[in-house]
Image 1 (cartoon, rainbow, N blue to C red):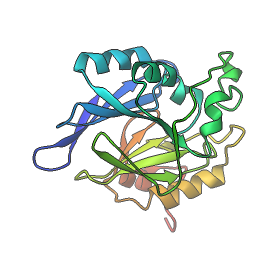
Image 2: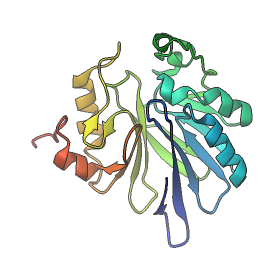
Image 3: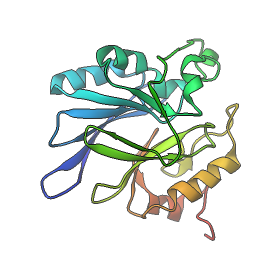
Image 4: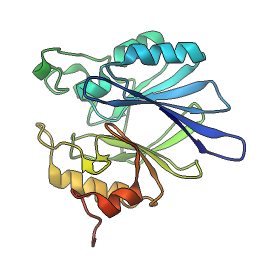
Length: 227
């Protein structure tokens, strides 16, 4: 699936979604339509499809971003780093240890024991990440995972949040993992996501794209403050 969101009268932010058959996880390719470099977010089990798509379109990868360190969001890191070794691998500073810890990234529990390459760069709350002509604001959003981050693009006509496993269409991320915490997740959604404009597009780690306004109005798991 692919959508385009205007940046100005001639340039758009192109968002390509590649859905993994395992875990139905969404990996994203973000690219300005006036450039041939891009960002990839949470490369998954479908790394081969992603690799072929990038090669077919002759896109260069400027950076690899992980919203958090669970197996379904980091499985493709090694392949992407092998194919694009100059692209830094970026993750929240509190999640970086999970990349090389099969227990912490949950892969050991599936009998796979995945170890990603180490992060080239870690980010913290409020930090701006800028690659491929795209600037993203980092926000720390614990709850599903202790160091989970989301990235917000405000340069487009409608804001976009790369949300990972925090907020879903009609649902929220699981909190039954070892460092999960529903109260923390609720706070993250209320303070870091529900404060964004209602028309903000939410790129979810699983399931359909939604908007902040839609979830504030209908999500049964987390209501807006005072709602």
